[in-house]
Image (cartoon, rainbow, N blue to C red; front, side, top):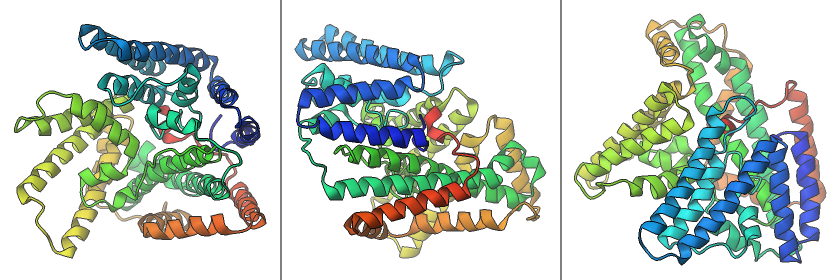
Length: 447
């Protein structure tokens, strides 16, 4: 059940009505959410609906045992068991072959925040199993995040009060609409009108067309993933639940370290908090730099057991280490304004260069893309006006001040309900008129 499908919108409407009808009774509410989560997984495959609650129940018992155990081998063994179970789910969903339409990695990462936080003493076990089942596979984010600490979710269930705040509900609708625009009218349009063809057969295109395709993919993946995130956060808001932000104009970052504070924020935080800080040698002179590279190499391999992802992760790891070394050497001394513009442009183009390896199926195909740049050919026959227009719109809207987005959201929330409904209806009709083939799967859904 893709988040852009009519089926999902009908599902969300039914869940919304049932949710607020049961909101006065906490146990019934949690039971409803847990059942809804399982139904959502079952719509993808019965395997998910079977394995996820089984793994969640085991994690619940493990966390309780960790909380009661004294420091020592027993606690470490229990945590190791949880890690093995959740990493096993990731590998199973990736390597088992047919019948696995999506990865369980986002579920696994979210589940691990629970047992690791309890182990570290950063949070306590959930009050009930229902609290845990409602939180760990909360349906808006189970496919591709945002990755939310279980303690952050469980603390919100007991604060739900009917009726839903009008402003919060309007913000949720605004985000769902915005996410649909990003996905259908920007990401899928760029993919279908040049990007896919350039990366499939780069030798058929000129250097200028390949460059446009790389720029197109750079913004396609952002609008695709941030569009999913908007729909997920908006869906949760309609149920009175706040999920953490996942993007903050990443291509406006002045360096690679700042890019990772803006791109897929919840995964970046997860890698930092649960992987990077767990690696040995943090206090040594070179250990922190090596650990950055190791963390990003593992982050690359998480996307897939492919050399292209390893290269992509390695490029970002080396860039992060170099950025930290540079910042340490400069000791954050001031710099002219033009330096910030130059470093932002350099960071953007480094990220776009790395996306070539991320998008390519093999190293050879990535090198084919790069080889076309070296040809310096300037043909533009395959650059349609529509593609260039949408790419220009994507670039402009990405770099608009964040305050403008907030103003639009607030004005939408402050408008009368009939106006909001009219906007959403017009948006739906516009998408239906523009898109004839339906939405492609979200890129990060497979990771």
